[in-house]
Image (cartoon, rainbow, N blue to C red):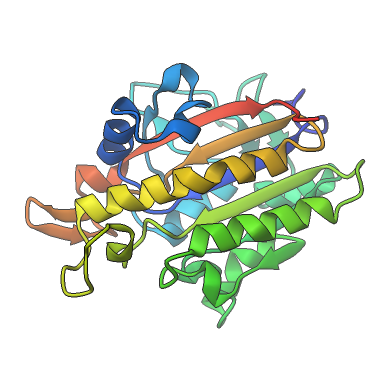
Length: 268
């Protein structure tokens, strides 16, 4: 990462609330053609989330604690704040002297941009300003929210504008929190109604919706130079698993998440 940082643009795309089992099932059955084309081997990596709801998980990820490989470690991290005794900081880790990765990248000359999704990024009150406040530039509007059936399209459109407005030489760190998978998501499943409610099937349909539009985001982020992309869930969610519904709880379907990172080669 010490070679990547300063050379490439960076993308962190969190697919908020995405379950590992749903992501794996859809990739294996050819229902995620655009994402699978970039996943190494066409498959997701199984990892453990650093938190069981959005705020906790993103605080950890911005501190350099991305989801941890689901096997005994320690596992060297891509990014880490400098602190004594870290067992997951290695020679290939980008170490920053800042309270979070966003500030660490800004200190290296990156333009840091947040495109929010779920409520913790909506800038409507003190709590909704904490995470966006890490960034030099942040965007949120109701069209990006969990209530919008076209949220990801709107977020991608904003990302495209951000990229086109930057000077060619300016390195970019873009963070996008995709809200489409979070409840309510029933409207992504053909034939479903509000009365039907959310389900594992509508969760899967929301991921297919994201896949239909993610190519535009990848094209934008690789339009100027090579981009290092991290695509991950921040936590999963339960749909009646062992009687549980939702997240901010300790069920395996919440702690186990899909993860991948890869390079997007320049398109021009």
